[in-house]
Length: 315
Image (cartoon, rainbow, N blue to C red; front, side):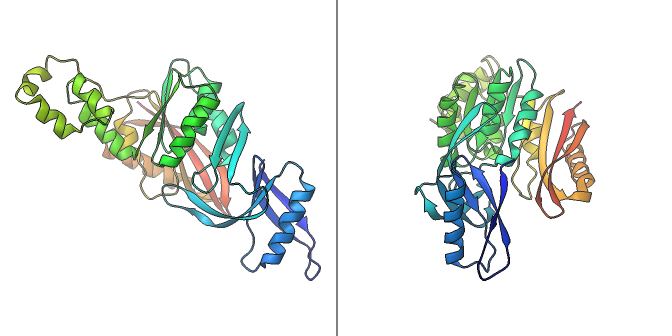
């Protein structure tokens, strides 16, 4: 576990507790709203003194926000840095706690997902952040290829570094951008001849320009040229942030018969069935037949609210 409780004696009040997350050598503490700055500083200094592995103490300010899942922290004491070197599952990760998202609480989930990947499978990880899921899968399975998709450019910079640090460049590929736009680009690309598609994927030209360059030869060559196929993955991992959009449309677009999807969502403890119902309705909408394999609580995120993982298969 990476959540800790430290008892702190306040001379003017009763004994109270403070919880903190430990990421590498950085402790991130969330204080009550009524906690004074002097109390925060005293607690941080005590934490630094008693926990020798901690080099920096930061205060968490507010909640994780938006699709980029950023948080804001304030420096309290110790080494003045917000960059972490974190280790788990025989992997190392470097990232900035303010500009990128990383959840140590998903460590066991990453290990479990990796254990379910079969030899030679192609895997897509959406919302991949600094690439913990892709890298743990690459290091702990015999997957053929893992595609790491993330919209946050800063996270992708760290993902590239982490892929190099873990020596998995031969297995993990980074695709920058909103998965909705990426999937649409792949879909459009599949309708073009291969030589034009490669230009689109390299971002050198767009679909419209490609067609205009092809001119009158496009229709004639379209049937003869080797087509680039819309990628269809064996496994899709979806560690989604708390957003209204399910992104299941994109998952279904990039799936085939036998594809396994590991879908994360958030709900009240007794409302897991509602998430399953939503998935089934989306599948019906996009004309996909599915089989629910497993419904698993994947961590408590607030009182009576959990992260849930739904494993299902395209049939």
